[in-house]
Length: 115
Image (cartoon, rainbow, N blue to C red; front, top):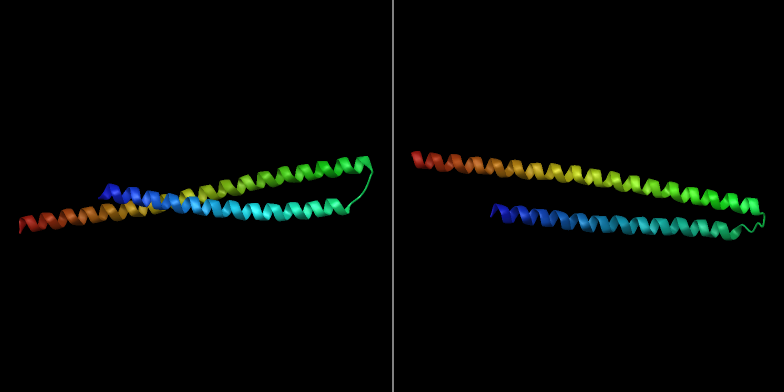
């Protein structure tokens, strides 16, 4: 029964993690699309034929996108670390509760046997 419970808790936690991750990815997609549309509208409004300006503008845009990608990766890494920390704490709590229950069961049976 303990193994079944442990596997069910693991499955339930993993399922929650997957749904949370998909929600986060969806939010990130919406926000990225919004910023991309804003950026595209700014690019459309500027009609300058100066080649040096166009090169500089595109280089800056590329650099900003690379910086944004690095920031997104940092956020995802932080989220993964926090989720791992919370999962480990939850697992430790469950383990402590299971061990305490087992000790009480042993004591109860021993006392019943002695009586």
